[in-house]
Image (cartoon, rainbow, N blue to C red; front, side, top):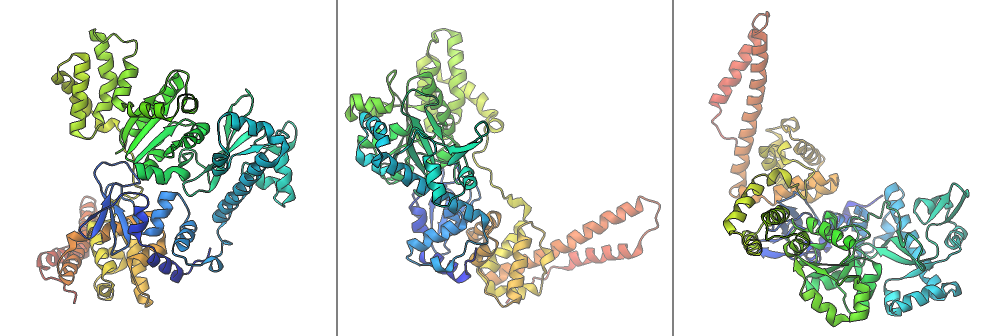
Length: 596
């Protein structure tokens, strides 16, 4: 892939990072920067900082950081090239004639899969709308109350029961069977020794990612055959843990209403749209995952889970609750009447009755109490203990003290217990909670690998590159011992020697590495520690580095001398003299190194 530095700089300068980030989350101006809840991990206290002046972001909670390209790559789960293209289109910068994919195999494969799934979607959609063979599929959708407008919006299609229609069509277009098999559109039967369509005799639901690209299909049978639903297999562009069906259509409405309704399946979402509910999504046969929740936090403040009242629905709701507890999202559970799902409830009862159910939804603690107290006599001690053991671990994870105490009060009232008794049991849980509760997010970069002194020096050099030449005269690359700081200073010194302009954006572009982005953005946005005369601060930092260098060398010699004296060897006078000289240097090095 060939992308010139000039193009990258031009695109970055044309896209304000504050505007881009604000499209995904709420930012509040704090001083010279903007602050919000991090979209990459669950938190209740904002630690995500975006700098308008420097055009970078950093989360001081999980460590994520970078520029506008990094942000889009991370939040949309796209490649650098996809981010470049997306931002260039947003800024009306035509770069199509300046890019080449020929050297990037991964990008070529992803682009091929996106293109094939786009073509397959159009094929299935046309087949549903225009082929005589699809009449039963059209009648099925009509009987389910799905309008032609919703069918067209969601690009619903049909896969022929002949089982090889898509295969023949795509082979005639020049696509190989091996390629189609690799992308999951066809399969190979070892028994029959032949290829066939992966989906056949099924209603086809295209699955889109957040950017509106087709990444998979879901297929539903028209009769009572099993399995009722099948989904595309996971591949390079499709991970069902990250995808929420319908989000590409509902994201703006979710952001507007600050609420998202999580339904159970494709038809539920379509019916929701049919009845004017445009803030609906569905998982793809899984419980809510951390990836889903991190995505939802970008758009919503409240999550309403609407599931069936059967055992499977209850189980799914509870699994979703467990994932949601550590997030900053409000949680509400709506339990529909026995035997009803959102689709048939809306069609039989209507929108108004459905809205009343939504208003009367339960909090996750209330819903949990309803489930665990079922068939339990909590007038007896055994029943009280059973319920407390089930409910308290969830209350313990509530971070807000007021909310937590309110739930304790309600639980004590329900069980006719003293609040002090519940609080005593809660304190026992909280003491052991640190080891039991897993972190939602663990940054890949551990900053303790890079000494603070080295990061402080780099912070000044990357914001005040005029000092680089003078600093090179006093220290060398090998004086940096940090895993990341060594790589950065090496590149900075080399660039200065070659007469290249050095900036933190240019360094991030060169490495294009998540760990390096994290340390650079943290350094740049931690400048409050570095306020004052930069020349004097840098002089003190360099003096400290020189002292550290002498101390390390002296300590190494000390170990060698002790090892030597503990053996049968004679004293090494040269090493002893060097050790003593280094000790004198440390005692006498009170002078300050100045950088003008």
